[in-house]
Length: 278
Length: 281
Image 1 (cartoon, rainbow over the protein chains, first blue to last red):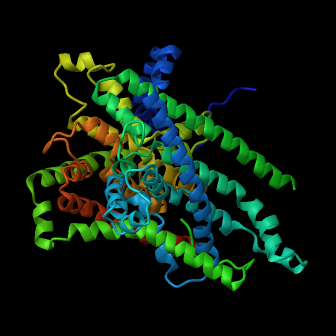
Image 2: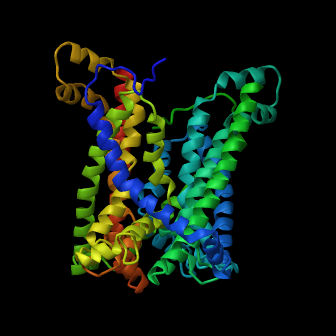
């Protein structure tokens, strides 16, 4: 059989549009990314490792991944509650709340950053009462986590929402009418069906939190070894013209994120396969 | 685009339902609404005339001009790319198609600071093209071209990823009919394709523009923070904030927050219009 690169079509303009697409894609996206790959390759494993095992770099990795993980877990829980509220509960003005969920997408990250700092600083509306209760939020890992919750919430809500929406309510009604309790219906019918979307939402919110800069950097405090996130450390290295160090940290972040996303993809295909098999 | 129509099915006991509503609303209000309120509260804390003075200040105005300039370059370029790419990728089926779609989504997977870093590695003093650029006295990093490039990168997928699924779903029967009836390619695009995709297109442009005007991390890496020259509005807000000039910082931030609110309202209108269109079709 002859190999056909493209299916036959009467529509014109394939060559020129695809040509332009590849040209522009190469220029804006592929060329700079190649620079990163080449710089990493030049680094070698030895060079990469030397940068990574520096205590300050390790501390920033631990902080970034740790806070991003906690924020993603909190977002998965509350994102589910918000999505359930938006789909299943009747409430006046729900449309407004639905729009508000997109706020972290629409608000520039630096603006969210200074606003969150103002709210949670020791003199802020929420920061002050918490301070009196003995909890310091701004300029600690708790503050970093809060900024990551802010930025990651829409990812969970917007992945779980369509899954809840597409759920066949007949299945639940069958379960209920056959005598299953509400609790069992939720656990055996609803939860398994939306589990893949919860996992995806978790992964997206986690990945976003790892790379986040603008909304985190103001509330973080940026003390080396204590509240310095990995993105900020890249900028610090660049300011010292240490391109090698900056590239190694960026590479470390990318590797860990890809690894985690890969594991989560496996989990997700496992859970959706199980669903189809059942 | 999500509807908020009510779904029946399992109805938890009333008390649980009430609890869910309270938690959801409290979470949204405390985490999302409160910061927004604070921005405007702080911006106008010393009266509207002080707010105006902070906005009309020379450096703030120059930051506003730069922000508008960058968006005016980045949005049309990515809009044009989005339309062209979705024609090639949605109307035709060819080998390697899904691979290209994956590549288009790549900038969303790269964190903002790393998006800036890749341009420094390419054009910076110690970068690949650095020595060559110095020889010809071309400045890209710590100058406006770098800011435009970084913005192009982070806003790259918005229009294309909105249009590709939409146009794939619509198929090409209408275009084929127009062509068999003697219309030419460009005319077919203007009269058939464009009216069909206008809401999706607008949606992509709105999101692209919001990100272009508000990008912070990537722009921060390549800008160099030169006052009155390479500061965009978000960077100007950062500088003022770090100087403890909070009122002025929030005044600048309020402009961006206002932009975000307009974006959300436009988004709502577009969603509403396009769902109306779908119902009629």
